[in-house]
Amino acid sequence: MKNLLAFSAAALGCFLLALYAAQTRRDSIQEDLWLRTKNALASIPIRNLVISADGREITLRGQVTSERAKRDANLVANHTYGVHTVTNLLEVARANAAIVPPPAAPPTSAATECQEEFNAALRNQQIQFEPSWYAIQPASLPLLDGLVEVARKCPSVKIEISGHTDPIGVLEANIALSKNRAQEVANYLIVKGIPADRLVVVGHGPNKPIADNATPEGMKKNRRIDFNVISR
Image (cartoon, rainbow, N blue to C red; front, side, top):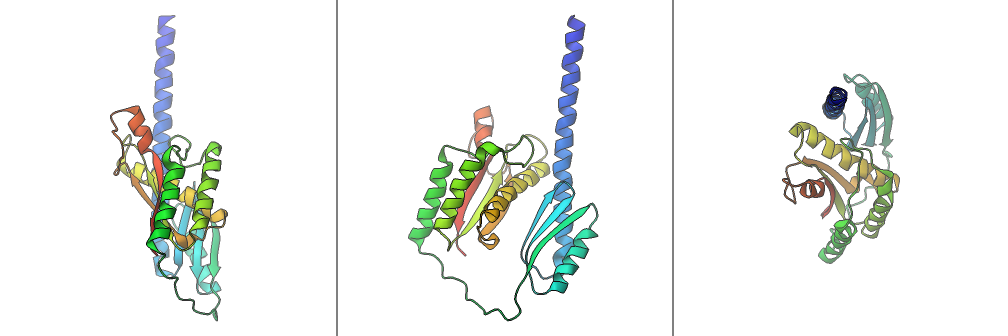
């Protein structure tokens, strides 16, 4: 009986280790795919380019100057090594569209108020993701909806969405995971009507902790998404 229990425990440990390794490798593959696609599209003028990777599927968002540029971007992305499917959501800017000057920088008080509302919304809550992955858990959707409402209240500011992780695992994989999680949050805001050009996505991995990683509670606090109001 003891031998059977020991064998079962060992088998479970091997399975969990293999699962973690597979997830880490998937994160690394997705970051490589995102970087290869971004580099491949460098020669095509695309304004506010956003690249989302889901497995080997790539989604492109942004603005181009012509239908030809949109087709070229689609062709280049499709021929990027590792990409299987491309969803091209690039928008073609109107040739005769009036030039609209950028909005003036918002008053400091408005930006400060907006930042305070983001801080209040996230003070006692965190956006939750699937373990070692960037899919948002359904339980966090009400919190995200609240953050969308805050973003709508201050339409004249840009918002930096930054992802953070604990230090467990490979640094590069954690940075990629944190950026993918931040991008998923940005995508949710975009779907809800927040303009993509108001959002800036960054991934810091474990490099900016706010708590002690020596305890489980500290690591949990460090696995987070921050919203920071920045000037246009």
